[in-house]
Every structure is written in C-alpha cells, then in structure tokens.
Length: 382
Image 1 (tube, rainbow, N blue to C red):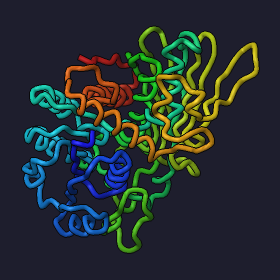
Image 2: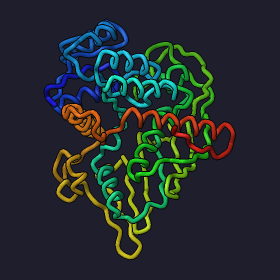
Image 3: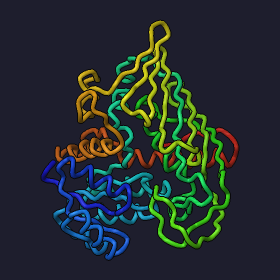
Image 4: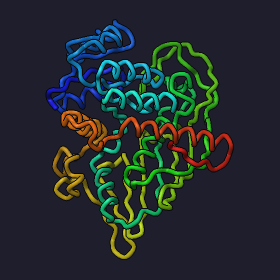
C-alpha cells in the first residue's frame, strides 16, 4: 500500500478530510488541484504538500500518482474522473458518482475498459459498529430481516439565508437531500441487510422555496458571508420520505431532511428481524442497540475485543476510545488501497464501487419519478 501515491482534486471540507485520512494510512499525497492556481498554491503551502497542480491535464500527466481522489462539486465528477481514468489512474470519487445515470454508466464502462478500480465514498459503512451490524445480520444474529426504518437529518440549510452550491441543480443535480444524504442511508441499509431496493414510493418537498444567495464564496457547512444577496427560487428537495420494498420481502421507510433544527448530521437506522433488532445512530456512534423480545435489551459499546471477527479490523482503537466520522474515511481508504495493492483487479470488492454509485443514481431517478407521478415505481437496475 505504501508504494501507491495519491492526488486530491478539491480543497473544501471533504477534500481535507480525505487528506487527513490518507496521511493516517501512511499513503503519500503528491499534490492537490483546486479551482484556481492561486487557491491551489495557497492550500498547498498551508497543508504542507509538494505540488500544486495547474490543471487536470497537469495532474493526469504526473506518472508518480496511482490514485486520484475527486472531492469537487457533483457537476465536475464526470470530467475529472474520466480524465484521470484515461491517464491510467484509479479513482476514488465523492458521492454522487455523477449528475445522472448516463454519466455514471459511462464511468463504470470506462473503469472496466481501462481495468482500473473505481470507488465511491459511501464512507458511513465504515463506522465500526455499522460493520458490526453488517456482520451480525449476515451471520443470522437477528434472524431474517423483516423491517428497516430510519432517517438522516441535518439543519445546515434551515434558514432562508443558508446557501450552498448543492441548492443549484446545474451544479448538484435535480435531487439534493435524497442524493446528498439519502443515498448514504440507502447504501448502508442495502449493504447491512444484503438486499437491494426493488420498489419505491416517495414524497418530496421544497420547504424553503426562496433563498438568499450571497454575492460571494460560501464553503460547505460554514456560516454564510454577510453582504449583498440575490433571491433565488429553489426546486431541489429539502425533505423526503420514501417507502421502500427490498428483495426477499423486506419492507422499509426512510426520511431525510436538511431543515431539521438541532440535527447536525444524525443518521439513524433500525433493522427488525425475526429473532431480534439492531439500531444505531451517528450522534452516538460507539453504541449499538440490540433488541430482544424475551430477554433484556443490550447496548453494545464499541470494543474490537468484543466485536465479530469480520468487523473488528475496522476499529482502530481499543474499547473505551471513541471513533467517529474522520475514522470512516481512513477505514474506507484502507480497504480500497489494500485491494489495489493486491494486484488482482478481478477479485471481489468489499468497498463501494462505481457500480454502487451507478445503482444509487438509478434509485434517485426512481424516487424522483415516484414523487412526480405520485405512485410506486419499480427499480430497473439493468
């Protein structure tokens, strides 16, 4: 793994999270590429990196780089992932993989043609106790899963004065809350249960129909800049609730919101099986609730010594030492880079792949269609 070198495209919140996690894994980062040469050079100096790339072509021509991390707004993913795949580099892309299924399908095909590994950053799988929940369900600890339910709630777009590029469809896509955070929840549930969604019935709402767009730069999750603004009509979803049918008769429901006061980033799920239940949420990520009918319920604290053999390797610290959001990136990158280092790109992949990202966009299309037509929609993954 230490023979591989990375480069990062994107200097915002998530790009810096990728840099920190790569450094924790001992993976050298050759350089970064930002939105302008000036911003790139400023970030390079501040972050202690060797190279500030002048353009995508400049990065693509760096033969010392094996893997490129795409951490930019959604509308740039296709161009940047295509350019780096064409130069023979593996790609780890932030979600969503692309703006639509046509673009995501093209990226799946290109990675296959070039015999390169593509990964999408559905990193929330990599909380240690989400790995434990997956292992428990797969070994039958709660019997056959019957129901899944939960939510992903945020408040960072609570006020009409809150602004981010994701609010603009030409930059982020036609769906927002569903695409940005709902796909995290859906990925997690399909992975934990081992069942894909087969049908959806969705209700979407734009709770704040007009917002104030500042005339200046606004970073994700940062307080808005004071000054002049323009009133912009909003068409993307602040909220969604989706009824779900999965394979093997599993039923579920998901609610997502970016306008729920006090909820900073609360992903919660419960899986109810024929012999027990599991529940977890990201505000207390080091506790997994285990529900029983005929004996006391349990709270399992994160401790690799007590976790399933399949899950304990995803906990970096011993019991009593909490792990959180930054650790999920480190564990995802460990999976991805270990796979590449193995040299067998036809081997099964444990990480979320480009195919995963493509299927999530198929789900997004079906959810949008269901809300628009006010009916159940069958998922056609092919």
